[in-house]
Structure formats: structure tokens, C-alpha cells
Image (cartoon, rainbow, N blue to C red):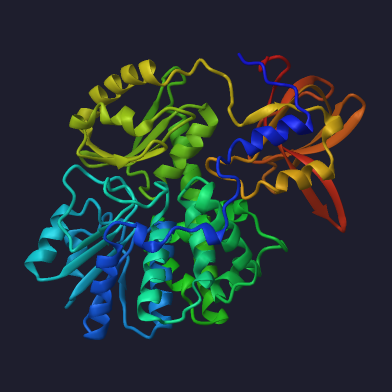
Length: 532
């Protein structure tokens, strides 16, 4: 149980400013590309290959970060009129990253460059050496104890790297590589034009929206509003928004692009992002929308089956099902986490192997938790908030038993404090002026969450369902004689009108038929004093 402070504008200001130790950086504060270890070596090798008209091959990844990193490189090389062959591995046929299977698809190559992958490609690096291929790895993931042997490795997590920010994504490093090439070649390419793609990757890959990440996302969102790329125009045609927020990308464009790699092949998404004209972009958008709709259906199917298995007393949820679609198990895990408020792992069993993904909750370090059972898994990787793994089905029961014991010791579920709730907010403080003030701290996202508030003893004055499936709710709340509207999406919960509740929410402005009103975006409604 937890007491939250009573808020006024001053305490809200202090709480939000405390998130930024360096106040607000801008693009002029970006570190030099050469702060990355091996960046100069990588650039000189690529320039030499360009001068000698050698074959350059780029290997990306099938998530949003990997697709956007590939797109940035592809667009840049088009701008400097240099051929670049691009390959994005297929999740189902190739597996992750630069693998021996992917190398079978590479014909004659003098230099291979990876983006958003490669730091764990030990076997593939050996094959490259045997074939006389210079391998340049650009990645942002954790460096293994014995890294692959490559011509150059650009990864900010290397111990010898002087780049000052550890949490950047693959597309950012790809952008930095292009910026360094731009300088070395004196090409005169305007690098800001790629920041909309970089911003999408930063948001989708859940990088902390602080420091240079914040600066690049702000610039990227501004760039997206005036973007020259056909894919942005095709997407924005479907949006009814003049100004874009980080959430528009994380909940709108990112899942659309991700759906290709999850269900079929990420090359579909790359073709959309690099479409040469609006007609091909519109066609690509329509195809991705169809895939994303199917992704939603499969996700719901797996989530429903997973919920039926959940042991609500478990410190960490582990569920598995026969041939659940591998492309959606990670999303299903995230939905279980939100629903049950604890870490969750969802596995698909195919034959004798279970493979899947996990998502963490609050401060539980999921990677460390699973690392305690490393010897029982076939493959395992990830970070604090998310993991991927595979395990022999015969090992699963013992694995879960030992994992629960470890989780009970390290991931306590007793604390009800939500660190994203700033405090108790009276309805009397809620105004358009306050909403404008909160906008100063956007973009919100990882490490800079949109501020949540709690108001206690709120009377539910009216309630109605919304949507074709009646799975959204619209509320009228009353507190101290003041009435405010609220909405809650994707819920089947019911609440008695006339009763009092504690409401947890974020603030939003609703624009409808020329009128602007403030509404509460409801996250949770609980009986009064549950949060006291």
C-alpha cells in the first residue's frame, strides 16, 4: 500500500524536471560519430570499397529498428549513387541476424555491413573470414564475452567505446555511420532528412527518451510532419492529426511495420518504407494494414489461450501452447504483463522445442532472472525489459519451478506503488493550461513516461460502452462538484454508476467537431482506498 503526495503545479514541475539531469539537449549536442570505437576504421573500409567499386552488402533485422536502420542506409547510398545490396533475414527461415543461412543468400561480396545485429554472429564471422569478406558489425546489443572476429565492430556497449550514451538503437548507429561517410566523402547529403525514420526506430525499440534520444526524436517528429518520403505521406493520409506525438508512432506506425516481419517477411515493410512514389507507398500501406489486422487477430487468439493457463499466484507467468504463432508471442507476453502486473513469458511449442519471448514488469530484471537458469535453455538473450529464449520441452517443468523460486526472491509483487503516478491530483487543477505545460516535456515514452495521476473518491456519474465490439468505455466523473469525461479502451469491465472509486489516468485533449475538451485516459479504476 502506498501514499502518493498531493500535487500542485510546483511539485509536478519538480517531478518532471528531475527526469532530465542535463536539462534538454538538442541536435547541436550530438556527439561525434568518431566517438564510437572502430567508426573510423569502418568508414575508411567502406570508402575504399566505394572507390574500388567493390560489392557492398547490408544485412539488417526484421523488427522496426532493423528495418529503419536498413532504410536509412539504403536511402543514403541512393543519395550518393552507390550500389548497396540489402538483405533482411526472415524470422521463420533464417532466424535472427547474420547467420550462416543468411550468408547462403549472399552472392559475391567484398564487404558485409550489419545494422541492428551481428554482435553475436560468431559462426557467421568465421565464414566471412573463410570467404575473404571483410565484416563490419554495427549493433547496439550487449557484447558477448567473446565477440565475433570482424574487420570493425561499432557497438556503444563495448568497454573501450567512448560514445557517451549507452542506450541507443541500431538505426541511430546506422545514421551515425552514414553521417561519418557523408563527411568523409564530402557528399553534402542533408542528414536531417533521415531523422523521421530514426525517431520511429528509437520509439519502437523502447530506447529511453532522454538526452540525445529525446533530441533526435523531437527533430524526427518535426521532420515527419514535413517529410519527403512517400511512405510517411501514405500513412498520414489515414491519420486525422495535424501534429504527431511519440504515441502515434509507437501505437500506430510501428506495429504496422512490425507486422510484416512477424507474419511474413520484413522485406515487405522495407519496400513500403523505401517506396519511390506515393502510388507504391499506398499499395504497400494497404498490404501492411491487412497483415497488421491479421496480427491483431492472432495476437488475441494467443492471448486468450495464454490467459486461460495463467497461475495468478506465480511471481512470473510462464505459459506455452502447441504451435502458437511465433510472430505474436512477444506481444501476447506484453499484454499478460499489463493484465496481471507481473513478468510474463509466452512460448510456442513446435515438436520438442519451445520458443518464445518474455516481457518484464516494473523493476524486475528479466534478463538476470533468466540468466540464473541459463544452463537449461537452448538459446537465450535480451535485456532487463525483454528476452527471447528457446528450451527443450522436456526441461520446461523444472525450468519453471526453479524460475518461480528465483522470482519470488528477486521480483516481489507486494509493492503496490506505481512509480509513474506522480501523485494525487484534484479535478480543480486540471485545465488546458496544465495540458500545455505537460506538453513541454514531450515526447513521452521509455524513461520519460507520460505522467499518471490519481484522484480519490471520484463518483461515477454516468457510463456507456463505445465501439463496434462494445469493448471501450466512456465515463462521466464527478469530484468536488466538477465533472470530467474519461475513456478506457479494450476493457470488458463493468462499474456501478453512483459509486465512488479511485481513478488512475493520464490527461489528454479530445478534438471533436471543432470543440476541444479535456478527458481522462483511464488506466485503472479501483475501489476507494485500495491505493491508500
